[in-house]
Length: 496
Ligand code: CS2
Image (cartoon, rainbow, N blue to C red; front, side):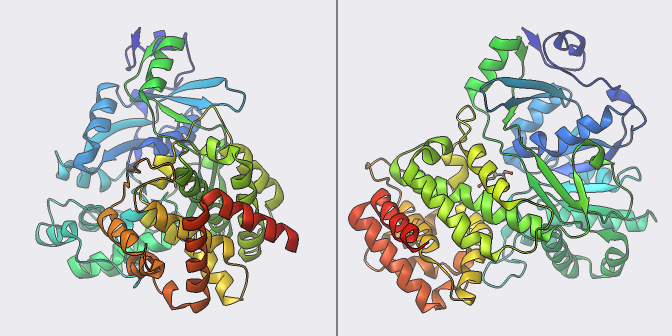
């Protein structure tokens, strides 16, 4: 049994591939906030590959754990010198393992806020990247504006030098950069939000306007916020993954990351202070990322939510089980093909048919066992970004909305917290109390669920949508989700 750390790398290298560059010579050029599984399966993986080019030594990553909740990952990475194993679960069931070395430093913000601010304001740091989740941008879905009522924001406005929120940290770091006369920096969101760079910019500058108004013009001139589309399915690591690594390779890694073989990263080429040549290791730099983002969010992420919500109601626990049900997979194909595809922007460089086909294959990866629980968690932040835009666009052209209405009705029933077999569902969501309360009220009048404005915005104003939603709700309550799906599938298929 070999404990994973710097010292043991030569021994580990007899079992799996390891970083072949001198990690002690790598300078930190990127500060990344949010060192969860996704970052470690995606950006840190691409960067590790890049650092194998021996002419490159200035793009190491400093991983920041921002919240108290992140103590465990911070301690694990610290203990392992930033090293961890990436275990790719291939479609044929084989495992490809690789130790990733691009995270060369880790910081725990609650323990030492100043160290994080100083690192972000370090002259060698050129990019600050973020995976702070879809809900982390602190905007109100119904107004689109920054939420100043958030207790963390209230705290940060009063205690600027010991912030808690990402907005407080970034503001202080940018202020330090300005005061030191440093050049600008790029702030790159890697979260699943349409126009993630635009949203990051809007939210950060809203906060700065209130906290440090004198900084605004410097930010306008010196900071860029590139948009990007990120993709790699990364389930939550389970104890059995840790055990499997130990059994198959003798590596004692307290927190390896498991993921699928597929990966994609499309980035807007807008970096004020330079950037790594990630294109040499598979990323794509383009002028306009929006069509790629839209395609991924409305097909992959929405597809996940569809499989997750419908699957959870039927008592499934993994995504491959849900798509393994042919009625659900047919429903998903109809949703992707008839409802989403027509609203997508111009995607000249992508073969959409192949893309959708590959999604079905990726969702079906039965070795990955991606958790429905993971997919359904924080749905109140996901549905508005993954599904509502499609509905709004279809409503605007009087297009098909039946399957989308069924998805939202299923979510309303899911939110009661019991599946169709009578087993409890654990709703993991910042809005769980409200969701459950409204879901219970909705049993007698389903449209009440749509009154959660911070999730649904103004969708309840569409009579057509509300009518379809109520119909779908009644159908699921009377006949169950599978029969409702079969019924819808047969009607739509007959129409084509
Ligand atoms: C998932 C994503 O959280 C979710 O609902 O859809 O985490 C998804 O697996 C990633 O975006 C894949 O790139």
